[in-house]
Image (cartoon, rainbow, N blue to C red):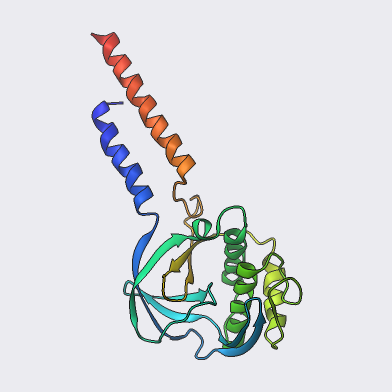
Length: 224
C-alpha cells in the first residue's frame, strides 16, 4: 500500500467516528394516523395519548415513535437541538433493546395491516415502550404495564416479532430538552445493520492501517 494513501484512509475512519452522532432539525406535524389514543401505563406512569408521529427531519417526512416518557414537545415547532445516534449506541449492546426494536419494526413492515390505523399505532407505541422500559415482551407483567384496550394488540405485536428477522437500521433522535424519538429504515441487502464502527472496531481498523504502512515501508526498503 502506498503510504500516501494511509492518511486519507485514516481521515475517513476518524470521520466515521465523528459522524456517529449527527445533528438534526426536527418538527412534529401531527399524529401519523390522524389521532392518538389514551393509554394508562405504569413504570413510568403515563396517562395520556399515544401513537406514532408524523415528523419532518432535515426536511424529510418520516414516521417516529417516542422512546422517552419524561419529556414532551410542541406540534409544528422546529427543534435544532436533536442529534441522531444508532439505537445500539443509545441503549447499549448488552440490553438487546436495539435488536428487539429492529425485529418489531421489521415485523410490522413485513406484515401489511399489522399497524395501519390509529388504534394499532397506539398499540405499536405501547410495544415500543415495553421494549424500552421493560425486559419482557408482554404488557401484563414486568415493570411496564398498561390497562388500556390497546394492550392486547401490543402483546400480539411483541409476541409475533420476538423471533422475526431484523432487517432494519434503527436510530434514536435525541434531545436534551425534548422527547427522544425512534426512526428506522430498511437496511440495504448484504449490509451490516447500523454499521457505525464501535471503539474496538475502530482500533482494529487503525491497527490494520498501521500494519499496512509498515509493510509498505518494508517493501520499499527491500526494493532499494
